[in-house]
Length: 119
Image (tube, rainbow, N blue to C red; front, top):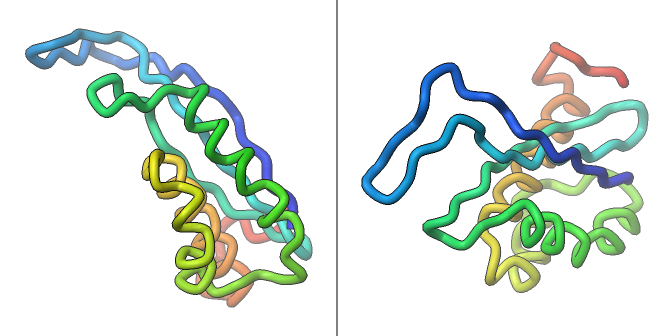
């Protein structure tokens, strides 16, 4: 299995404002896992309130790169989630993005999601 990610600064149509900040761009990390001609995508956004930055999200993904890339096949995401949970104790945002990507890959491989099935 192959793990990759992409950094994206997505412009917002309207300024987003809450009590402690306003922004016109949403920093995002898109995660991609590939295996056997299929791919799955997941994403997470940064969040200053929770201390989530593109850098620490990418750092959390890098901590599990060897584990993900050593997988011989596509695991059931629930089993994999339990296995890598300790690596994401400080970054649930990165964990969520990887989880989404694995579920996307898993369902495509099972034939349950017919869009964008092949790379």
